[in-house]
Structures are given as C-alpha cells and as structure tokens.
Amino acid sequence: MQEKDSGFVQDRRRRRRRVGRIKKAILAFASGWIVLSMLLILGLLMKVLSLEKRLDYFLKDFGAIEDTQWVEGSDALEENAEQEWKQDSTESVRVDIDAENLAEQGDVHKIYLTFDDGPSQNTREILDILAEYGIKATFFVTGKEGEVAEELYKRIVEEGHTLGMRSYSNSYNVIYQSKEAFEEDYRKLKDYLYELTGEECRYYRFPGGSSNQISNVPMNELIRFLNREKIVYFDWNVSSGDAASIAYTADEIVENITEDVVKYKTSVVLLHDSSEKSTTVKALGPLIEALQAMNAEILPIDENTRVIQYVKADSVE
Image 1 (cartoon, rainbow, N blue to C red):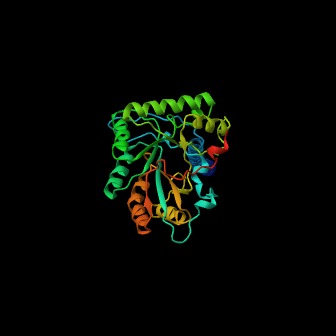
Image 2: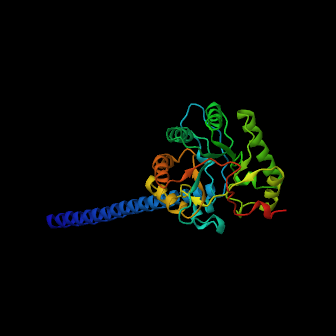
Image 3: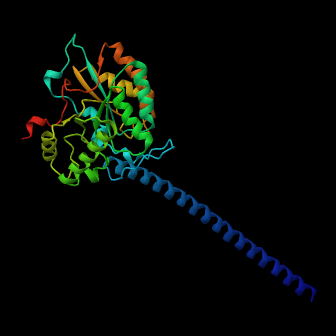
C-alpha cells in the first residue's frame, strides 16, 4: 500500500513538473509574441511617420495646403505658406542663358536679393539686418492679415525696399485652378497692398516660376494677363537653396549664392522669409559682407533692373 501511495505521489509530481514546463513554454511564447508585436508596431509607426513627413513635403511642394492667417501675438506663422514647387528647390539647374548677362572680367556684379513667402516674424529680423548694413532688397509677399503683418508691409515700403507680389493665397490649387482664379487672386493682393501701403505694386513672381508645369492654365495666358496689366514678373537665376527640404547651414546658403553670382552681370537671388527660414536670417549678414567684399552692388528691383525671366514676357503676344 505504501509503495502504491509513493508511486502515486511521484506520478503527480512528474505531472506537475510537466504542467509547469508547459506553462513556462506558454508564458515564454506569449512574452515573445508580445515583444515581437511591439517591435512590429514600433516599426510600422516609424514608417507611418516617415511617410507622413514625405507627404508633408509633397503637399508643400505642390501647393496643396491652404495658406493660413497670421496669429496675432504669436511667434508662429503656419508654414502652409511655404509651398515652393520642386523646381524652386533645384533652382541651380536653371541657368541664365542670356549671353549678354554673362559676366566678364572687370564687370561690376549687380545683385538683387529677393525674399518670397513673407511676411513673417523672420521678415522683421531681415529688415533689421538690411537696415544695419544700409541695403535695400525686394520682397515678393503673400496675403497675410493682422496688425503685425500689416505693420511689416508698411515697413517694407517705408524703408525703401521694393514691394512685389507672389499671390495672395500662396496656394497652387487656388491660383492655378483657372485664369479667372489667378486674376482674382492677383487683384485681391494688389488691392490689399495698395490699401495698406499706398504702394502701386508693379512686380510679380509666379509661384514655381514662369515656366512651371503645375498650372492648369497655360502660363502664356497668365503672362498675357500680366502684360496687359503692365506688371513685370521676375524669375531668378541664382538660388540660395533655402526652399529645399535639405537643411542647408547658413554658411552653405552663403556659398550657394556667392558661387553663382560671379557668373552674371545681373543676379536675381531667390531667398525666403517665411517663418521657418531662421537659417536664412542667420546667413544674411555674412552674405551681405561676402557680396560687399566682391565690390558687388546690392540693389532693390526697379525699372532699371535687367529682367530675369524663364519665359520672356515679350515672347507672348
């Protein structure tokens, strides 16, 4: 009887050990599955974030995001205004083919610093730097509302800079939807700026440039409209690179510009003063000093400026 009881006890012990091993195996499998699932979820999350970032760049590049208003009392200006088309991020491939504008030894370089997409809080800092160096520039502005933005439009004019237009909405989906949409956007910005500053704006910059392929309307039709309005549009032949998704340093922005301006008698330089372009602000002082060291003339666009255009206005009847 005792032998029987002893065998029964041992059998139960062996069974408990087997159950224990099974439980441990199940627990280990469950733990491993949970860890693996978490790693997979983390990996998917990172891919989603990466795709979301790429989508943001895509939407910015093609103007699919609507512009927003200036938030009074805030340092934040929604960056939906920054909608440069990809060609604006690779402007260095757009060379000036006008042989008459190619610089020769002894030529004085005329440099026109132009700022797109403002005003923003960076515009104020840029104006301060320009005032410090006694330099005049050109601002191709978009439509912003609120006292802070209105004060900056006025300051641009009062301090002797050239006030140009880049579109009110700064949204490709709006301005290039139809010829009528373009004209409405143009008139809205022109009237708005005149009401604020008393300045009759005479210069325009097409978002994406005059040769862009984004517009639903043939660009010749829009150029013809501006010609009738006696508006001169400017493209650019030198780029800072600050529109690109690549984060250039201030030194690299200066280098991008100084390497190209030596090629031309007249250089229209593309820069941006939207609110995330703090590196552009940092680059401005060193850039001015580098250009001055070249004995270049830094000027605002006016009626005497050689016109830089990808599609020549006088080629459109």
